[in-house]
Length: 79
Image (tube, rainbow, N blue to C red; front, side, top):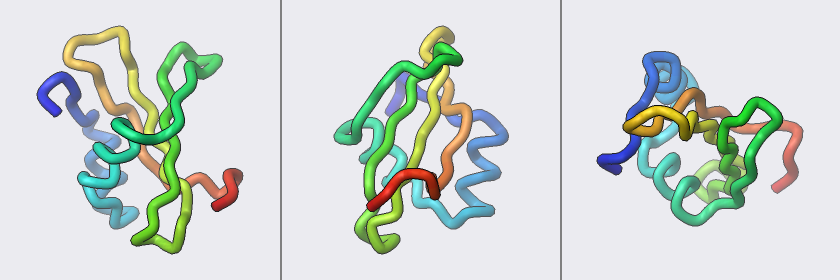
């Protein structure tokens, strides 16, 4: 997505956690979203390729392009 960029931390997390970039885009486009207490946008979506584990993508919407701050599989959220 041209209006988004990965932070260095988020890029590191993709590699360390074996998260496909395509899953991030899918989560942003079709997942649930809400504004967090931190002001960032939080997107979540179960990823079938990872047994339905819920991917959590955090985006800072106040910069241009919008910055993907971090990505992780959220153990607190159920499949």
